[in-house]
Structure formats: structure tokens, C-alpha cells
Amino acid sequence: MRIKFNIMTHNPTPGTPPRILFVCLGNICRSPAAEGVMRAIVDEQDPAPDCWDIDSAGTGRYHIGELPDHRMRLHARRRGLDLTHHCRQVTASDFDDFDLIIGMDDSNLSNLRRIAPSPEAEKKIHAMSEFFSPSAHYDYVPDPYYEGAEGFELVLDLLQDGCQNLYDRIRNAPETIL
Ligand code: 4NP
Image (cartoon, rainbow, N blue to C red):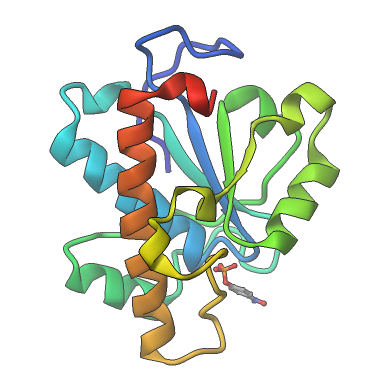
């Protein structure tokens, strides 16, 4: 689900928040959690939260239309996050509609590079781990689908760290990622 607002430009106008798409495989665990975490940060910290366009999608099509996995929703809710996104598959047109396309792991990133319609569009792809603090000790967001509660907690820990750093980077040094 998106926050309403959009100026349909390919490059964000200076001062305009970039449109952000988080991507994983199923779009029922990691990327909708990233969307919820980022939206909460923007709602709490940004002077103009309605100006942000934040969404998520999956490279796979197994769960289209579904709400996030009930375990992801439970763990997110314990941190005050309500995940209401409905699963959708990423498309080539997402490269027109978003400025930053952020994959959770190497497989997501290689799938995104395959879908990117042009070399210019490919430059919009980033790894979530680019925004982790060094203390995170991870270089990807592990898939929690076949894991226990600690897998979901780890995903949320990584995303809360990475999304805060992403937000700070957008506010303080957007030219370094856009
Ligand atoms: P996600 O997790 O990519 O973080 O949404 C997964 C969800 C479902 C499946 C794989 C990963 N699946 O194979 O159905």
C-alpha cells in the first residue's frame, strides 16, 4: 500500500523525498516489514510525512493479494507496527514509478537487475545492507520464512537499523544515493 502523493518525475526534485520500493522474494515477510518500519520512521520524524511514497513488492508471485505472513505481523505489532500491505509482484514499470528500489538479499538484487528496463533504471537498485550500521554484522536480510521467532526478530532489528540510516541519509546527504 502506498502513501498518497506523487510528482511523476524520474529524478526527485531537490527537497522532494525519493519514492522508495522495498523488494524481497515473497513480499509477505521482509519487504512489507521494511515498508512498515520506514513509514513509521517517516511518520514520527519527518515534517511532511504525506510527501513520501513508500511501497513494497516481491520478485515471486506465490502470495499475490495476501496480507503479510501472520508471524511477521505478530512480531511487527509487538513493536507498534501494523502491516497492512497486500502482496504484489514487482514489474518493469516500478523502475519508472520509484527512485530507490531496495532489495533484501543477493537473489532479490539479481532478479531486480534482470527486470530493470535500462542501465539507467538499474542504477536505482540498492541493497538494504548498504544502510546497516557496521555493528549489524550482516550483509543481507535473511529470509525468515522457514525460521522461528528469532528469525523474524532479527529481520525487524536489521530493518529498524537500516531504515533509520536510510532516512538520515535521505535527509542529510540525498545526493549520495540518488
Ligand atoms: P519474504 O519471505 O521474501 O521475506 O516475503 C518469503 C515468503 C514466502 C516464500 C519465500 C520467502 N515462499 O517460498 O513462499
